[in-house]
Image (cartoon, rainbow, N blue to C red; front, side, top):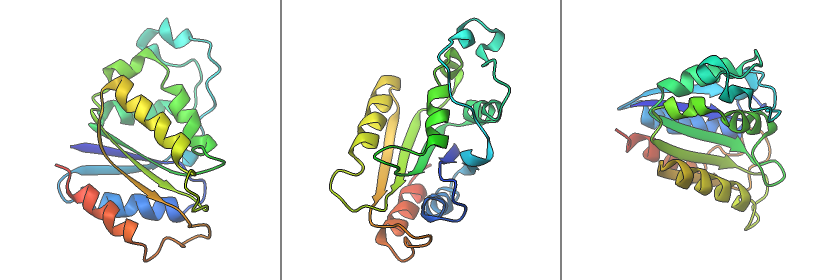
Length: 178
């Protein structure tokens, strides 16, 4: 399986990246895995013009990093979303990617499986709720197979996730995929 992991943190080597790498290390045992930092892609927000519905190939008129993301998503069998939680939502960089998937082009994607990896500074009971609900709605709408979720609260400083049991859980989740 080709697995694409989109990491949404602008902080290189931070808790989101560490969690995504643990998952990737496990998944790479039986699969082809690529981690793409969406912060490096420089994707502009969707403006809701819907010209992608009439343009050849359903490409967005914006000539930015989303073209790379579309190409990688078109080749993926599984999409893993990894993000820090910013005020009960995914990072702005990742939200831009999600919104720009409002294109008929997505119908040509092979993605059937998904997983969700989240980290938050807060350890509050509801910190992940809004993102998880949106994820569930997307999984349901597209009839994806949710392969799992790893949610890690209480990790604020860079590297705070080190030694956490969720890293092993992420590795095992990845390793179970084939």
